[in-house]
Length: 84
Image (cartoon, rainbow, N blue to C red; front, side, top):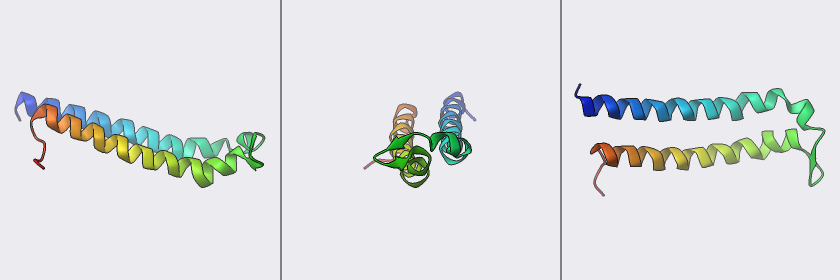
C-alpha cells in the first residue's frame, strides 16, 4: 500500500474507533448510571429515562451526520472522494 493509502486508512480507522467509543458510551456507559441519573428531573421526567428514551437516539443521529461529514472530508483530502 502506498504512503497515501496508509495515511488514508490510519485516518479512517481513527475516525471509526472514535465513533465506536462514542457509540459504546451512549449505548452502555450512560445507562450503567441510570439510578443516579434518575435523581435528576427534566420536565418531570427522570434524566435516566430521558437518556434511554431520547438522549441516546439523538446522540446516534448526530454521530451519523458527523461521521459522514468527517469521512467525506478525509476522502476529499486524500483524493479518493466520489464525484457528485
